[in-house]
Image (cartoon, rainbow, N blue to C red; front, side, top):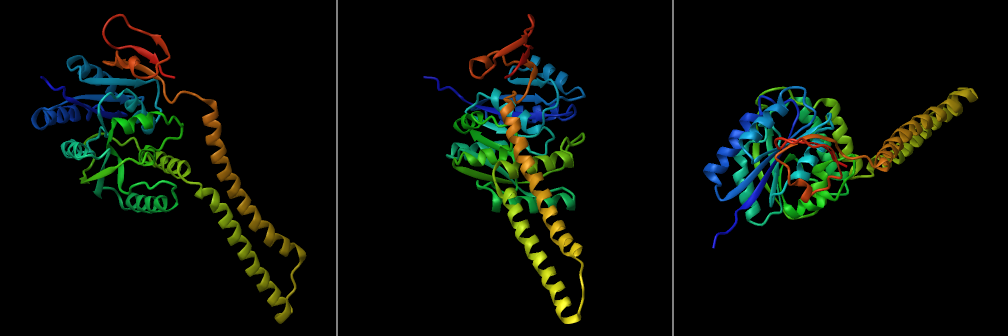
Amino acid sequence: MQVSKKMVSLVIPAFNEEENIPLIYHKITELFRSKMPQYVYEIIFVDDGSRDNTWSIIVDMAKRDTQVKGRKFSRNFGHQIALSAAYDAAQGEAIISMDADLQDPPELLHEMIQEWVGGADIVYARRINRNDGLLKKLTATIYYRLLSHVSDVSIPRNVGDFRLVDAKVLQQLKSCREKSRYLRGMVAWTGFTCAYVDFERPNRHAGQTGYTWKKMVHLAFDGMTSFSTFPLKIVGYMGVMAIAAVHIVFFYMLYQMLMHDAHYQLAAWLSLAGFAMLGVQSFALWLLGEYVGRIYKESQARPLYIVEQECNLDDINKHHTIREFTHVQTSGTTRNTTIL
């Protein structure tokens, strides 16, 4: 009796990665052929609105190898959305997410799968060293320490989006369709058993990173607001500090009046209290605006992403929600779709 092989899905978001896509494909295929022939696998690339030849390279590989599958967004929706689209298409029993720039070494896949076979539902690739600038290291350290203290969910430190999740974990992630997505927190939120594989993160192989400072700050704020109400509490703390500061200045002015015969006009007293409260109120309005803005996005109920083209995913409609097809080509396996 022949036992069917387990499937592993590799899900890889890509933005302007034309130089890295062929290399990571060859590394993954060689690894499975040499070290893990007992598994079948699929490689799902999601082109997040690239402006180079990333999509044409994915399509060419998909024509030669049916294990390569692809989705092309109509525009750039962002890394976390692209990763979510790859998750939506995955059909494996174990799903491994990784970046296309080879900073997530494919050589770790075998060890991560062994941890999964050993019973872990989530396997994190944990960075023990990162070749980043001093400023980026410092800000990342401060942010993750802060997040771990204020988050309602215990989010592991020094882990990115290089991880393995079991199919049952993925099923829970697919049920979460919020727009401001922080998948590192969402995976931890599921609460399944986890394990870690430590590695030293290498430098990017080629091309420019798509994670600008602006995008990193946006992701960090998504993580903070999605899994903690601490930013709202900051307003209260600032109010207490402002009131304390006003009292200190008030007693100083009172001391000067009583001991040194100083005189202050009423405007000085009013300005003291007014400026303190104005700062607190402005900060409070900004934080409330951020939360209200996220509520507004959710209430719009727009799709997470729009897929312009797909390749080698003809059977996806059997497993995932695709409500409308804008166009289907009559030749080949590439099609244009709208995902709702």
